[in-house]
Length: 150
Image (tube, rainbow, N blue to C red; front, side, top):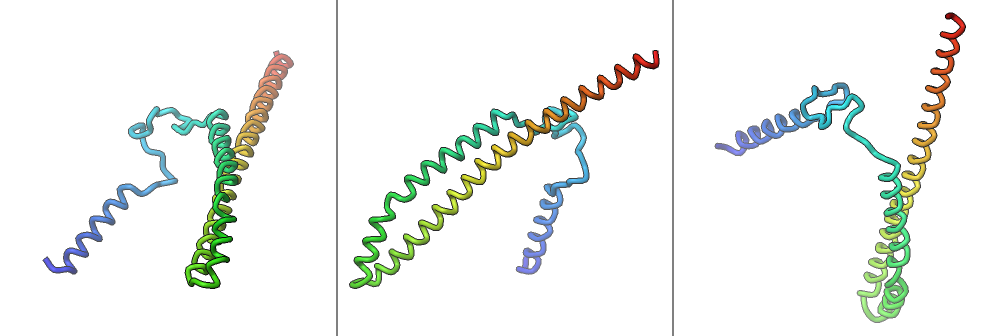
């Protein structure tokens, strides 16, 4: 089998696999594969779950904020001392700078996760309150409407 034939066969196989696993947003599959098969869907997240993930993100933030800087001063001092005599000093300074940038990026990501989950939890609580009060008002309106007619 030539390279071209084998390459074509591999591309066709990959395309068939991709088509079979492609996500369709405009279609809900039948009960097969839906897990519980409930009409609301399978994804259920409780406030407790959101709070737990948010708390862990906050704890990770605090730990990383402290532990991510342990070697900062000594690495910076070593790089400065080595710059005069060794080419390695500049490289060490570059590594330290990249490390600090990565730690800052991770800190921002942890803060974003924690804050977003807090926001999501509060937003869903507000939505829940709105739905409950709206439904209660509709039930009252219906009840009073039926009382006036009857």
